[in-house]
Length: 309
Image (cartoon, rainbow, N blue to C red):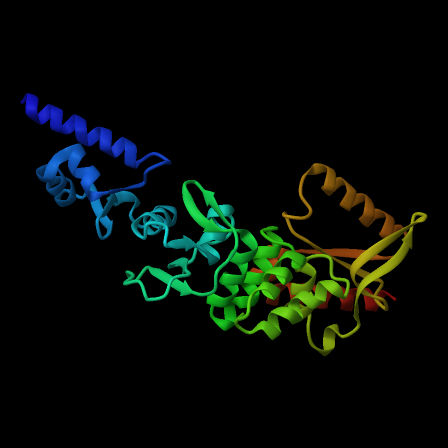
């Protein structure tokens, strides 16, 4: 009875340690030191513990957690692998969606025998790394660049827009990171996107709207970054349909948040309305998730305004 109680106590202590922020996975030898071989066998059999990677164990309930897997990868590889791409961006900001597979980088020659949920990118040396929650990651600009390279071609622009919208990186930082590398997948497309900011774009929401959402002949009259005089001051419209006197503002919570900003936006809309310009607003999330609806709404707004002019 006393032996069973001691065994249960040791397992409880181990579970508490694995459930904490510092050690989501532990090497097998430390698990054996804590609960013994029989204890490990029982814990695995009853679904308490599981082998996350060869020689490394964690709580079975957390085995599919992205951060736990990232920590396991770094420790299992003895820091030969660093977390990069969308995985690193998720660790840096949980609003960035975690990919289905952990994305890691190796600067060593030779391939790692990785499980199906781990994707390793082999490439040239990068200068800086940081630690996030005990996990070694590439810094954000290199992580974004790796995310671009790793993503399927159809997903690369989404990675680009989301990373900039969440301010994981600035256009200038990303351009510098790309310039440092000899090889970048589809570099030409990335440079074209970055050139939009050199040409006057002020946010990724604006670039997304102009390049992917409000495209085609029906939106050909839209002008970007137009100065309008209203209430004795100059206002800059993200997009303007001049004939319809319709201003399109492109917002997102990462750029237009908080009650003070909302109040400023309302005052701006009122000033523009007094000057004869109606305003419609679209956010980053709705442009990404439902572009068809955004197009329908703007099309209707333009038609309505033209019908009254």
